[in-house]
Structure formats: C-alpha cells, structure tokens
Length: 282
Length: 60
Image (cartoon, rainbow over all chains, first blue to last red; front, top):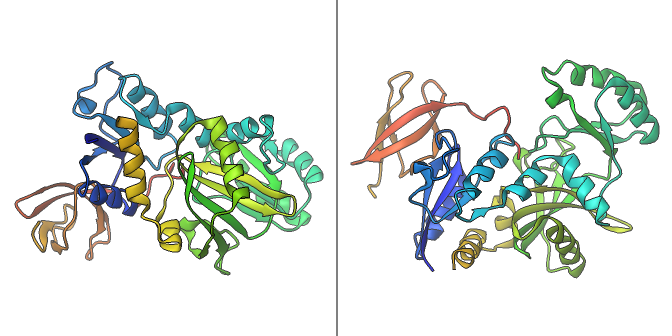
C-alpha cells in the first residue's frame, strides 16, 4: 500500500536519506518535515495535513516525545508511539519498566546529589559507569575505574547548568562490547556486536568502533521479545550486554541509527522499515 | 536530478557546487566550515541555511 509519510527530524542524515531513496522504489512517498517548524497543538495542524503517517526521527530527546504526543492526537499513525518514545527517552523510566516486568537490566542507582553519589559508589564500587538519565550517543557517559577519582568526576556533574542534566545513573561496568539489535515490528532485522575501537572505552556507533555481524540467536530474539512486550511494536535499536547469565538490556533507542548494523549484516534495513510502515498504513 | 547543484553559503557567500542533495541534508561550507542545511532545491539551485553542527540535546 502506498501513502505519504513525513520523516520528522531537524535534518536528513544518512538513515533518513536511505529511507527516502528506498521509498522511491515503492509506492510510498517520504518527505522531510522539519521538526523545528511544525507548530503542533492545533487538533488538525496544517503542517501534517498532507501526510498519512509520521516517522519520528528527531535526534533530540526533548523534541521526540513532545512531537509524537501531538502528532498522534491528529489521528494518523506515528512511529514510534509517543508512549514508546517517552519511555525510551528516559533511561530510568525504561530501565524501571523493564525490571518490573522481569526483563534483565543492569543494576543501577539514581544519583541526584553528592550524597546519592557517595552512597551509589559504596553500593556499586568501581569500575562503574556514570551516565545521564537523558541523553545518548555516548555523550557524557563516564567510566570510573578508581574510587579515588570518583568524587572529583562528580564535581563536573554538579557544575552542569540544570538539574535536568545533573540527573544520572550509576551502574556496573559490564565490559567494552555490546550487541545492537535493529528491531522492526517485533523482529530483529539485524544484529551486530560493537566493541570499543581502542581509543575510547565507549562502543557507541556515533563515536566510532569495531563491529561484526551476529547470526540469528534465539536468546537475542527472546530478549528483544521481552522488551517489545513492554513498549510495543515499533522501530528500535535495542542495546544488550552479553553476560555469563545471558543477555541484559542496556537501553533502547527510539530513532535508531542503522548504518553500522546495515553495513555489518548486509540487510537492507531501509527497505525493511518502509515495508513495516506500509503494513501499518494498510 | 542534475549531476551537480549550485548554491551560496549564506554566511561567507562562497559559491558552492555539490553532488545531488535533497531537502534537509547538511553539508559543511569548505570556506567558513559552518554546517549548512538544504532548505529547498529548485532548478539545480540550493537554498541553504546555517544550522548547529549538532543540537545540545541530541542523543535520543
């Protein structure tokens, strides 16, 4: 089925371009809609009136959930759902939701103050990871290897301009690799293992790393299933840590990059996403 | 789609020639190094607007 879809983002990156190019080979038409100028709020906003669906690709963790909420209220399908986006945008909310559902996640402590941090360090000793509740792409994620440097690292958190940015999680360091699963609907369309490139302890695709494709693993799909059961079908990047006890869920991206997974796996992710969008429209 | 597109950096007014681009894509001005976003493409001409390299709250 055809249809006109708005890619909502502040710019067109590699992924969005692939989606637009793939759509040109199908009955789907995808156009860029600048997330800075939709002016949503009217129950029938003119900026979305020409579209049959919205594909939310805002990189901003502020804009995504807000725009999805109002786009959904117009009655057209929005991918991902506002609820899913809002859940994924907040690492604490997501982790708490999954843990309560029995989905394995890393242990963590919420840190809102120096006192919280001192107690968290006592309960989760180094090496541990200090990461912002809101954020991604590995930005401001710090690996603390030694107790004697922990408090001086926290000085920088205290100096951040707003409590919103100061809210952090402390969690155990679980090694320098992770498994990134590109999920479309309920299925894992591709998976790759990412490792630090040796120059930076982080392994985020946005920072450069080494990756290798992973063949189908029922344990990965079982973990992905348990995540999708909680946040609903959609298009996600699900990050997993491989541990001796099995896979545990690190975080879920609601507007995932897929260049590295597509490159490592050889899967035409853009065509698969567009196929899923067409299913929704049908 | 034409083989190349032409535009002018809105900041330093350098004339630019680019491979095919679509609305919303970004490029770096080779002269002043600012990030430019394609607002429109019409008759082989790019309309460009300066944008931040990345927004402070990127990282969904």
